[in-house]
Image (spheres, rainbow, N blue to C red):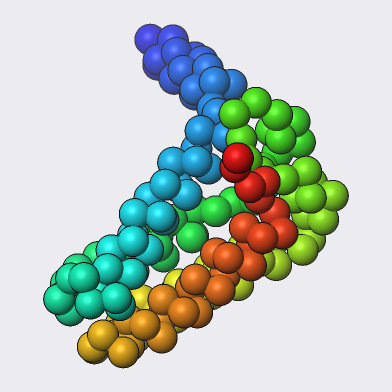
Length: 145
């Protein structure tokens, strides 16, 4: 009976791994990041009042998602086709792309470790994080339309 359960478990794991969609996974992460950055931007622009809990939640989302950015898993060879705006430059310069991801990971972790205490702090944190996003998107993303 134990062998049967083990076999079923391994089969289920294999099927789920085989049907994983790195394009959909990375798009979901980027969408969540965009939403979190939007929340911070609204505070930085004065469209929303400073709310320490909201800032912490947005930074937590950014950091958690940044730490999930496993380049090998989310950008495997062959995942540059279909409904994606990932540039072929990712696969041409994987080391450069990994360096950008590593900087994003470090900067979001630092922002979360010392969350902003006011609007000016949000602006500063968003500036650093935004440079990461913009720099990576400029090099490694195909612009839409």
